[in-house]
Amino acid sequence: MRPVHVYARPVTGEAVRALGGEDFVLGCTDAGRAKWVESMAHDLGVDAAFVYKRRLSGARTEVSGVSAHVRGKRVVIYDDMIRTGGSLLGAAAAYRAAGATSVAAVTTHGAFVDGAIDRMQSSGLLTAVVATNSHPRALTGRPPFVRLESVAPLLADRLRGGA
Image (cartoon, rainbow, N blue to C red):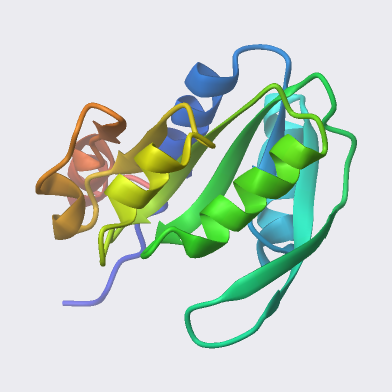
């Protein structure tokens, strides 16, 4: 047996489009994910944005700026993994402060530890969060605020020998 990489981009891309519609900005939580988000934004035919942040401690970050014009636009943030939601909420606050009309998020891996879902929902910063079912924590204690998308079709395709 050999390990096989399963790429969730088809699932996350559809989720991003469903949340954003035709006219939105695809954002990310930091510059480290900017190339990936820029590539997806290009595929979707929308603008990309990212925030500048610095880590203050293991659990705290600070956002210092936004890289794109989001005033009057919906922003959908892609974050590969949401653990505590701290970086996501910092980015959402920055996009809202820069004039975004609404902010939603899509993640491949929803670990959702330490009350992350409650914190995200009660913040009032996010309209919705979509996560794949790739992480077991995404399946437990989930309110309607978090919608799950299945990666089962991707896994089935790989098991059948697909690319």
